[in-house]
Length: 218
Image (cartoon, rainbow, N blue to C red; front, side, top):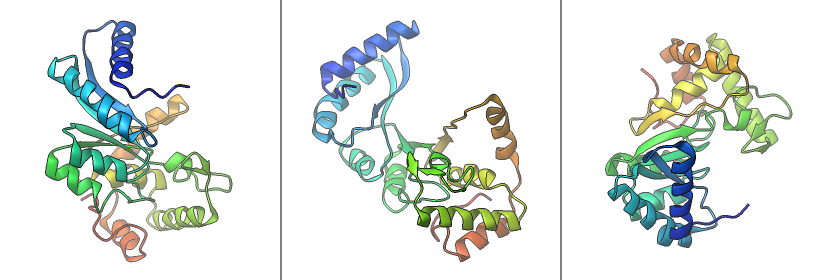
């Protein structure tokens, strides 16, 4: 695998995508996982995408990452439209809440939430469950189980709470759902419509399981 965040690399990638898609325009183009490539991303990839947006080849531009710190830097130093925040604003991990999400509100950057189940540990917090693409630590697994236990007391599936929680933040525009089977895909609308009592969010906040400043669904 070659990571090429140069302007030429990005332009070539977009051109190849347009050809494969059989279209002349892409709605959103993300700089994907530039964690170890900040200089190339900011000096090469971003200006190239900015030009393509001005030309109308790309409708919106952004960055997608499994961290919030570099996304916050993008928010401060660029003119982006949207961020894909993967795993950093979930029922389990609200790392993006103090800095990134307020920046997005201030600068009009929409947020898409990915990894709402944190690689699976919130879907089923069992031994061997994954968090950030690796086996969850005992501490993470214990926290996920505590979240699940509180949901159980209110007769609410943990997955329903995990899906609905991040969408309550005003910076969040949508949720990206990962599925393995068609029944998972059919389950998402049901979980999204599941009424969740305010008492559940109050209990999670009282137990220190969600940040006191995190908005919760009405």
